[in-house]
Image (tube, rainbow, N blue to C red):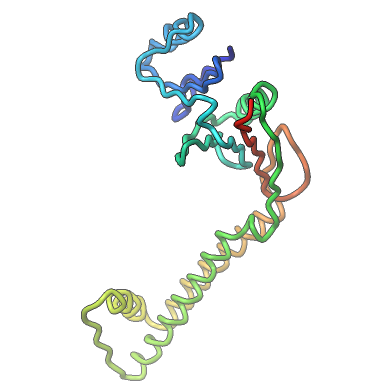
Length: 214
């Protein structure tokens, strides 16, 4: 049996592993120690969530995420722990004590690490070009009318942005692109790494694949 306790806000207050089952619970303030005592007596407190090992297909620990992800029966549960050392400790315990576990490392490339920033950059560019097209037309005296339909509702938003004028659109979109580019460069140059495993640059996911043959 192994039990972890946390007082951190938004953490799961108790995470435990015994009898080939992972347990998590968030008792009301003042009841944590009583729940731990019940667990030590191998009695499951009310309100605790349990995941038997034979349900679990995979356990993931991903750099930069404040939880351990447990995949089971087509569903997902997060064991929320802010402290990276405790996250690593729990994952290491699973790695060493879950029978039939196959351990692997999925190292993210720089492109995969900064993918969200690239998508944001593309969206800003598309909206800016679209808005500038209308803004230029408006300043030339053209009038636009949009009515009905999902597409036209989006075009209506673009027209609203276009009404700001070419100069303001360039300033706003330029500022957003600079912020996104800086964030992208920082992310791929200085990725956050796990405390337990420092295996070079890039985002890293550590996985346990649980064998069903025991």
